[in-house]
Length: 159
Image 1 (tube, rainbow, N blue to C red):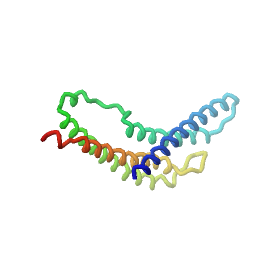
Image 2: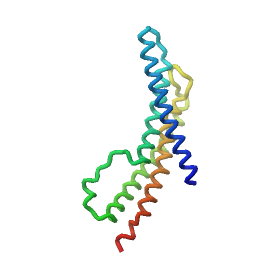
Image 3: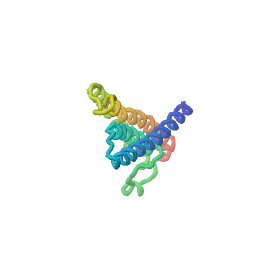
Image 4: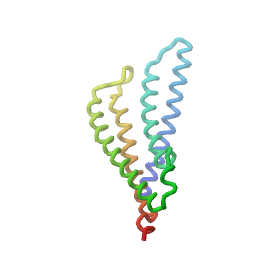
């Protein structure tokens, strides 16, 4: 199971990096073509599509690797066992929020299935599914974070 998770994480990093490169390329190409008075509106629509996917997949990568901003001003003076319990509670709140995002994101994707971009025949629900996909991946990352906190000995230190 851990091998599969690691493979999926590497695929996610590759997709995010590749999507970002194409995003930059499309925006740069669009700017260059505008200089020659050529307009390719599909470049911008595709760039917006890639922006959504790279932003949300990048958020999961940052969450998984602990690169998001955190404030421990209040908790750093507490005993380690209390810090771990608070951390688990925060992870549980994040987990609940992610499940809500998945549920309502799927509902929105169903509604958005008939809406398409102006210049490319891609349903807008594919953009909405970027949030759902990232949230689903973040659920696994959050569960692993909770498991790691429990393994650190949250309940062992208080004895």
